[in-house]
Image (tube, rainbow, N blue to C red):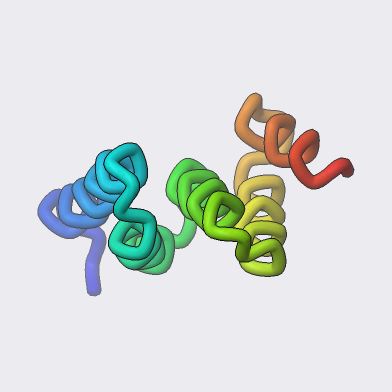
Length: 90
């Protein structure tokens, strides 16, 4: 699917909604939307960071480590990547 503005907006909305749901304690629903966002726009490190934090909060360590590794790979040298490295102990 081409990266139209509507396509990008859709996944950005999924990511934002997942943040709101997480804050409200609806972590299962938050995880589903965060997965859609990260998989829909897989080059967006921020989406992976959000997903990693949701996984970590749900005790899904393996999934969280993978998602944090994606952040490091996609955005090397950024604050987001440095934060992911700290969390991973890398």
